[in-house]
Length: 180
Figure (cartoon, rainbow, N blue to C red):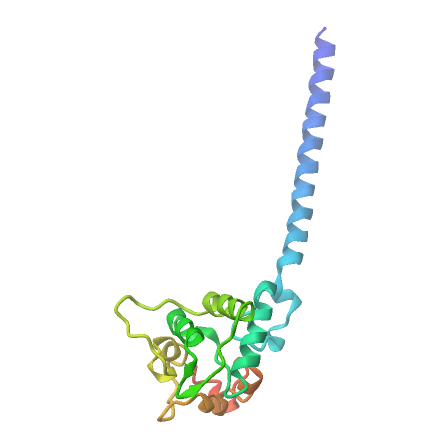
């Protein structure tokens, strides 16, 4: 009877080892597949990413609509430059820096708002809502060592970011690369 128990114990150990081996192999394969499927950085080389942040697919249309509408008149700014409340107010107001605009209507407005609200930053509780780039603490934080022109205007971006008109703020002018 002890031989029967020994055989069953060996068989159970082999089955357990086989099950553990299958689980480990399955986990490794699934992890590799998940990493391959969700890795934006491996699919998009940094040199080709024009925006400051890599944009997930669900926000791409909102970004395109934002750029299309805003760059008709001026360079489109990355959402992180101004707080969420500024973007909200700008989207809701048809008076845009002294110019009467045709406001965006839904669904494009919703798509643009989702993009801007996701990639902008929150404002401090007692902080004044900045409507000018040079009043934004985020803009100042993103340019800590930059001697900014006076006055700072949206058109000034091109002096350091030569591809800003194409919404590429990663590429810097050679003399600006050591300033940030």
